[in-house]
Amino acid sequence: MRKQIDAGRRVEVGRERRARTRAKIIAAAFEVLGDQSGLYARAEDVATRAGVTRATFYNHFTSMADLREALSFEMTHGFLEAVTATISRIARASDRSALAVRFYLHRARADRRWAWSMINLSAAGVIFGAETFRQAEQTVREGVEEGVFATQSVALGRDLLLGTTLAAMGSIVRGGADDEYPETVAASILFALGVPLEQAAECARQPLPSLSVSSVD
Image (cartoon, rainbow, N blue to C red):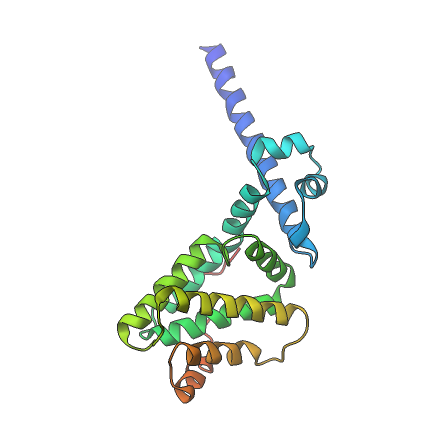
């Protein structure tokens, strides 16, 4: 019995150690990809920042693409949940879309490292990560069904929403945007999706509510 307990404890300690190392690598990836030059990050760069060997890196992640996917989830899951919970109380898809765009762009202004990480991750994978990608598509679909969006296809509307937001995020972190840029971008996206200009501007300038949860990654 004693041997079984000892063996079980060793397995548990090994799992804990592995989890800590994996978390350390992900944290290092955030630091590396959160730099303006992070688009060109290599596994070796992340391993060095994490203080682990290249072999250890590959014990936890099969490739940089695998690490990028894991980091994308870590960076966006809680924030997306908070944004989704907040905008879910809003009736119109146009209002929900405008709020979501503004939440992402205002966070980019407040947290440049997060913004650069999102830009660099999106350049080499799905824009803003798979979860956000699916949620944006769902919101556009709802807008089309409600008759507030007049786009040729849901996919086109999704790409317009995400692509424009990503480009705007880049302008913000490079210092090429004024204080009202998130609202201007949100209104422009709605207008491109078929919302009348005056209504689009009104949607984009409604008071920005507090996020529904306190922890957003």
